[in-house]
Image 1: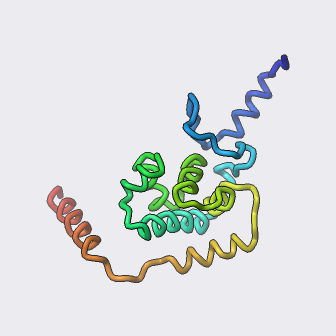
Image 2: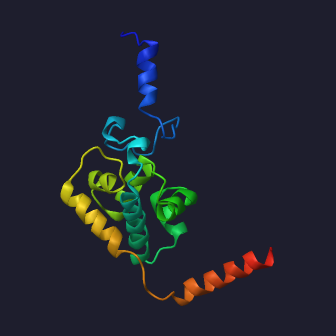
Image 3: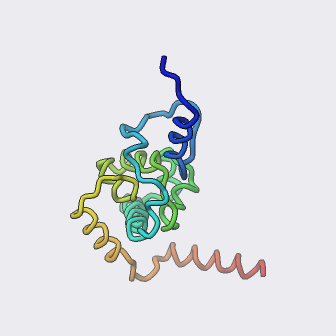
Length: 162
């Protein structure tokens, strides 16, 4: 049996910086290794990729007519994780979340990891198309009745607690 030194363990732990570590078996283990992933620090300054990933998730969800809650249920993710993915374009998604979303949306996992900014592999054409998608996915449409009602209700909640 090989003895592992303290330095080996520290180097190993350093590769996991920025990721939540879970104990116990996962329902389905993703077919990639942590060494395939980008570190959180290497994603700084790439909001276009995170914006595009969040927008992709939102539009895929909406194209199915799903609420955020339904997507969270279908993907076996926490509701808060889905909200952060769709709305916080500065937060790196968890690799497991990307894997689960790839399964739900029937998209290639490796390419979705790249769109999410988590893959070391860089396909220049995919990067260009990701940026183009991010630029084109900004909504200019009027709010739907449901969106307007949700906005009005939330504004009244905020105003009533002032």
